[in-house]
Amino acid sequence: MLAAQTRPALRELTLDRVYDARRRSDDLFSLVRNDSIYERPIAERHRIIFYVGHLEAFDWNLLHENAFGLKSFEPQLDRLFAFGIDPVGGGLPTDQPGDWPYLEVVRDYVRRIRGALDAKLSERSGDFTRDATRDGFSLDTLLNVAIEHRLMHVETLAYMLHQLPVEQKIRQVDPPTLVTPPVSHEMMQVPAGVATLGLSRTSEGFGWDNEFEVHTVRVPAFEIDRYMVTNRQYLDFVEAGGYEIRAFWSDIGWEWKASSGISHPVFWKNNNSNWLYHGMFEEIPFEKNPAVLDWPVYVSQAEAAAYAKWVGKDLPTEGEWQRAAYGTTEESASPCPPPYSYPWGAEEPKPNFGNFDFERWHPMPVNAFPAGRSALGVEGMLGNGWEWTSTLFAPFPGFEPFPFYRGYSADFFDGKHFVMKGGSPRTAACMLRPTFRNWFQAHYQFVYAGFRCVKR
View 1 (cartoon, rainbow, N blue to C red):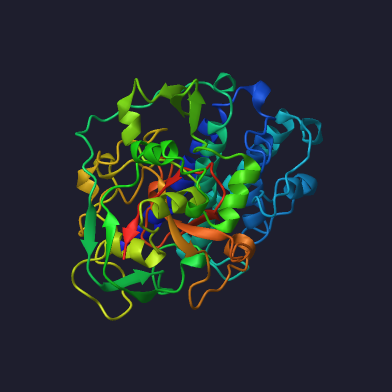
View 2 (view 1 turned 90 degrees about the horizontal axis):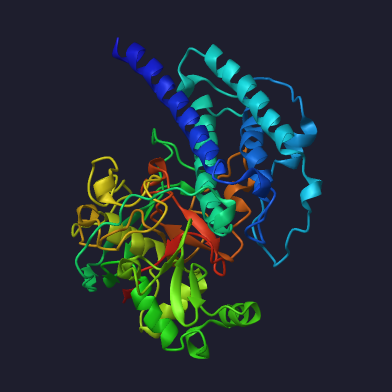
């Protein structure tokens, strides 16, 4: 009886998540004024209009034949909206607004796809986890792929729209900034031990292909910053001439910085020697809003690594970050999941544990969420900003690409992308799991990503 009750409940939960993810993407696009929907806020990315069609095209291309045996009604649009852009090799897109369909054409395409998929989903009364698709994966797995793909774009689109001029957006209001005591920076001792990375294929939970297979790595003792590096700390680096001192930068990082004229984080602006934080809907002067100085600084991996070298430290490896977030003082010698699902324990994510799940547009002070500290005393490891590591994005032992999305991870095992862990204010709660891995190139400044340092 319990199973008979549970399966329909799980089915309804999955459908609710599909609809909730759509609502979040629709709400995000509604921030953009219609006369700005063909803008390209970040040179390496598509115009906004592409993403309006891309999210539905992805769902359609993933599901229509593989799961439901449906025929395409707009194959040309299926192809046009199929793939995004990752800024590899320095090449920039050159398309013009007139190369894209009218907005109403794209919106009609979205409506038709949702209608066709929803009709088929409503016909499936059974257990999605037992409903196999043509590729042999369950319908539940493919729906999780669709849901998380959309939610990832809700986050990446947020940082893209962050670069759109304020007057081209419809302003939203953040909850008030949390009042916190002064940040007392210190390093926490992490004893030698084992970090568990990856997800077991026997797990009932969803994971992307790069999250498999579970394994352990031995991590020597180290120290790690209790908090992420703040705007205040990074300002010291900038004012000390950190962007002009060659010794702090790798060869590639220095060449990138010099050729691109990079002299400060992309989320900062200098107005007559006064620093401003370039927010989603306003520019915030540092001197009039000192709480901003205690927010985590958002920078590229190259900038993070330069700062770490300036202070005589390093960026953590993926294993070190994982141990600081999920480890305990007790060692485990065999592959097993962390003792808890989150740094703070087993309780599901809530606003008092961190700044995540679309609660805010902006960061909060790094010491605003003491309830979210890990067992080893490190704070703010989920939410408030992804955290750069020094680990190149590469497959775990036993990696197998998803046959229905072979390029999701494998296309980026190129020695240019670095693992990020944690999450940002715009990261969905479902992606706060211990095994989730994010990645970007070292010179990409626009993502909501900061860092903390380690000493070995």
